[in-house]
Image (tube, rainbow, N blue to C red; front, side):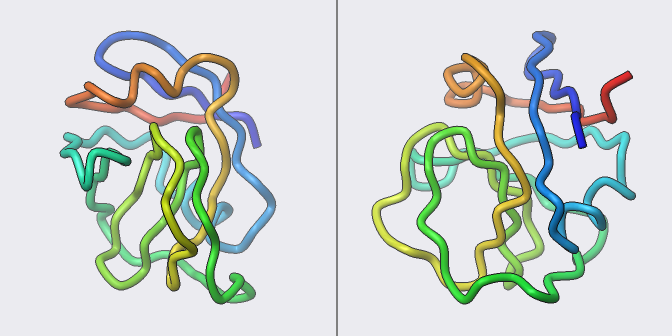
Length: 116
C-alpha cells in the first residue's frame, strides 16, 4: 500500500508491506502525531491502540528509512539512521521512498495518510 507522510509540512512517499501489522496500521489512517527522538536513531510516536503482530519475525535489524512498530511500547518508529543490532518485538511496517529519510532526523510532527 502506498502512503504519504507529511513531515513538518513536506510530503514524502512511503510504502507499507503486506504484513498483518502493516494492514492493521493502515486501518488507523489518516493519523497525525507529535514525534520525539529516541537514541538519535529514530523518531517515535505513540499509536492510539496496539497493532496485530501475528506472523511477525522474532527480531529485525532496522535500516534508515524503515517504518516500524515496537510492540512492547505500542509506538511507531521512523528510522533516520540504521539500527545497531537486531531488535526483538520490532515489526517493520514499510519504508520511506526516496530522500524523505533525511527529514525525519529533525521532524516534530507527522501526518500519515493513504496515497490518493
